[in-house]
View 1 (tube, rainbow, N blue to C red):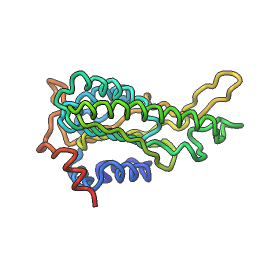
View 2: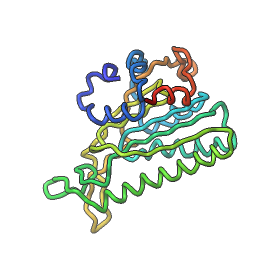
View 3: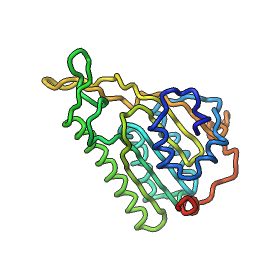
View 4: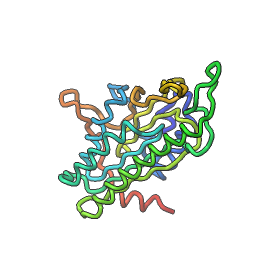
Length: 241
């Protein structure tokens, strides 16, 4: 993956974290085959189409590293709920989110101080942390219901990474990667008498596409260019020490 994303000078510990957490020992497979398709960039608000396409597989694996994951969460919530009525081809679903560790001081998100200097704001960080925990609880709740019914095995995991929300990365079924950079200078205007906050707006983030699939110009769908992957359970077991 490092070679595929060459030229993005801001990639660093965040990317290493998501690779370690999400891709286990299979990162070499991805590194060898990722490429830039003809449509090289999308808007974050277009994530729904990628989620829909990912759920066409029997084994669904969606991983995220970024700020709160709100845009992806909104798409996944309704998609997972729909599996309770009609699972379609999906039989295994794993969703992973990595978000900043909002329990420690940080410069983004933060309060806008004098002369624009970022000032750590414990209360604001706590609100964002609670928001992420609510997403975790809702998705995990649906995953447990799906698994209890028995038609689909589902899991949702939220974790923390050290650092500010700089990179936004979405990985779909280990076949396609979307990557973009948050505007860390973006501000949210507080309600009087609240101050302004440095609060990246993820839905505005443009994302580059890195894929080992080819988009069909006539249908708009992604066509796989390699053999199908083994089930998630087999791949995960193989990755364990």
